[in-house]
Image (cartoon, rainbow over all chains, first blue to last red; front, side, top):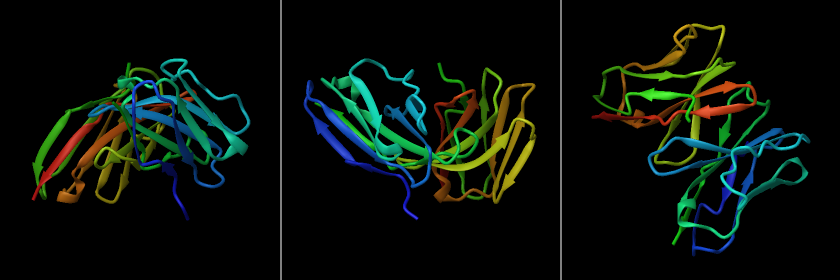
Length: 114
Length: 109
């Protein structure tokens, strides 16, 4: 079956512009996660969604970042008024059961803010 | 701060040798997972070990967990050039999965 997909794979934007990153999780996975990875670094947790529960937004670095998950499936991460420090690879993952099982990662979106 | 910290940060070995990577963490965990990442893109799950397990095997991979020392190790036996990648440990505690900063493994042919 299809894995987690993300789009776009690469995004170059000018400082101050808004961007939207999309994640399509594996069908039936109730948990969805967003991470950010700067060059040569580990993964920084941003947000996760579990079913119909309120999302855990505690990892979002500023109020310029927001995410939603529609219909318990597709998720969009929005960054408003992008800054150069937002440049990173944004990774999405989904899981069939919250945290007790492995996470399946998408290929990521490489965001470059010029 | 990162929950998991990998050691070493970088490891370079010859094909056929074994590679050992270590991970330390700070708080109690439900389980610990190891992931592999090629070329800075998506991670691939390798193995999960639960807090009540001490050792687990999967093919050429062997993972140990010592909850008293809050540490885990990943051993890759008979390494291959294709094993070249970054390896991350990730711990689950409560409602969050926390990754370390990874070990960059280079296997030279």
